[in-house]
Image (cartoon, rainbow, N blue to C red; front, side, top):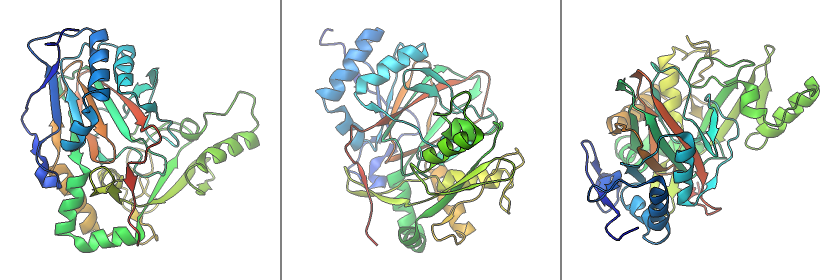
Length: 364
């Protein structure tokens, strides 16, 4: 690879200034493309990402830019090629536990992002922010650009926490004291929904043909207990799992307060599906209980609406081009999904941070 073969920064409409988040000031997200009209091969793309990550402090630059980077101009055309490029960052693959959305494995550590209906938005969230088992990093790549829509909005968790501190300090104090309670209900069969995976897809990876019903239930419960001891089987065979976790956290690398959770997405989904009253069965046939405070008391609707509105008003739209790849710090950046028309293929990969903790908690 010659010296002139490198990536350079570019700008696009909608980028934000990270001073709003409490950082020193840089465009959010960082955006990189091949310099000097260079058209890298797949092998060259892998090599340069390895070099940027290991020798040129790419992750430090990503942190300065709010925790996100968009790579444009990569020759990614297949799930396998995306897998090879994404592995160049050197992260460990994350194991999903209790996955609510429908996903299909297409290559090593590469899956469909969410197989929910294209007309259905996904609201701002941190990946697995409702669980004690969550990935540190996410990558997404676009293989097919839809005819219309289909953007991936990204939102600064640091910025959301800072805005809510100013606009609703009492809400922040309650969240610090109580945390948030999420309930996910998994049906026996898949439901065509953004959270429509079955109990077997979510927790049944160790079930084998010929297992008795008692063995199947035990194996499912063993998986559930990896991140929650609060669960309930229902007469129809569905399973509810409850999680109580903090949402106001400390982003260790920046030293800033961050918002890490699925409160905004859970509320957006509940409200959209008209599932705001028990038993929280939505118009899509799936259950969408609203988030509550960790002690089980209701979160004030004005606070839920405020958090969601700030998140949506603060988003930066990633308008996909074929071959694009995005890297997100899951502890600093939320993401969502816009509805679309036509064929859209955006794949996801979830990553751990090689056993280094990058998020902490405040002592009450």
